[in-house]
Image (cartoon, rainbow, N blue to C red; front, side, top):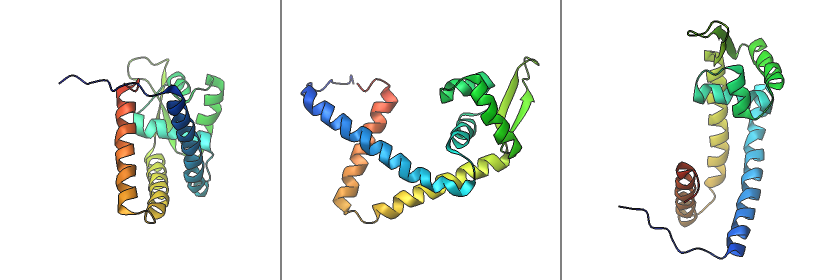
Length: 154
């Protein structure tokens, strides 16, 4: 069945909701990111490691593009991750000139433990909302996930 496009909303209302959503998302991410301080790794390293853990091995260029940084910056990030034994660098199976960066089991464990801490932090706060509020959040998440899945929000 084709997706029916709903009637367009007034732009001022859409902008107001988008502004609040943006602000809330930033504040939420800052709060859960505080849970990562126990790892001893900085946000840039944890973000790059996350790309490798959840997205698989990458070249330095691919990892830099995913993290929206220049290759020299990513080289420094990867060097730190390697010193911490969170990543390994191996020759590409198809091109010996290229290197593949992948998370070690220590890196995977660190990321999974961090995710568990962040989710637990959020869950602790959600215990204080009513059933109806929790259902509303679930519906909003379904909507957001659908928008992200569709790519362009339509």
